[in-house]
Length: 330
Image 1: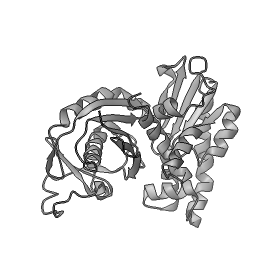
Image 2: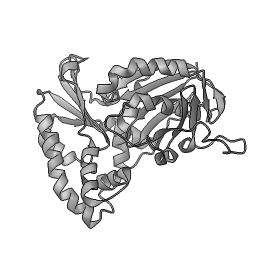
Image 3: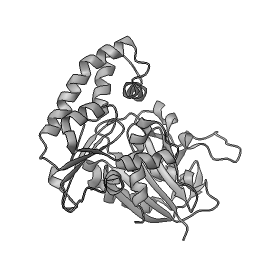
C-alpha cells in the first residue's frame, strides 16, 4: 500500500524534514524553527487566492489556540529559543503543519508513517506527544481549513537514533561493542550510550552544551543581534567581523574546556559515532580527543549527496533525520 513516509527533526536552529510520497523520489527541506501562539484573529484578512500559503507563513488552529510557524513567528513573544523550552510542546504544531503541507504536495491523502526525533532528556515526553498527535490529527485547521491526517504509524526516538540505526559502519557489531552516539546541536548536546544493543539509560544524557552556549557568549561580547544568523556565520567561518573574531578568540577555549571536560568524565566506549550540525565545526578537536574511536556516518553523507545535498554543514545537520527516515518501516 502506498504511504507518505516522513521523518521530522524539530531542531532549535532549523526543523529538518525528509519524506517520500508513495514511490516518488525522496525529498528533503529545512525550515526556521520558530513557533509562537498568536491572537486567534491574527490570520483575519489574509487571503491566498485559493492557494495555501508556504509552510513558513502557515498557522495551525486547534482548541488550544492559534499557532504561527516559521520566520513570520519570530516577531511574536514566545517564539524565542529558550534552553528550558520543552520541544514536544511546539513540536506538535510543527508536525501537524509539516504533515499537512507535504500531504498537499501529493495527488491524494495517504496513510502516514511518521518518525520524530527528540533530545534524550525529553524522550520521556514521547508518550505525551504521541497521544497529542493522535488526538489532534482529526480536529485541527491548517490556515483556517479543516484537515484530517491518517497517522498509520508514529515512532518517536531520542536524537542520535537515526545515526545509530542507519549510519553505523558495518565493522561495528552492536552486540559486541560498546558505542556512544554524540550529537551536538544548536541548543543541546546528547550522549547516547549503547551496550549489547541496548541503550544504557543511566549513562545517556542531554545537556546545554550545544552550539548555543558559544553563540550566546559571542553575542554578549560582539553585540550581534540575530542568534541563528550569528551561529551560521561562526559555523561557516564566513563574514566574521572584527568584533566577532575577537569574541571567538575569547569564547571558543571556554566552550571547548566545558565540552571536553564533560566528555572526559564519561565512561569509556569502544567507539563514538558523531553527528549534528556543529560537529563539522569541531571536527579537528573531536578527532584529537577521541582518536581512532571516533567514527562518522559516511554512508549517510554519501546517500545525502545523491539527493543533491552538497553543502557539508547541511549534510551533517540532516544525517540524523535522514537515517531515521531510512529506518521507518524496517
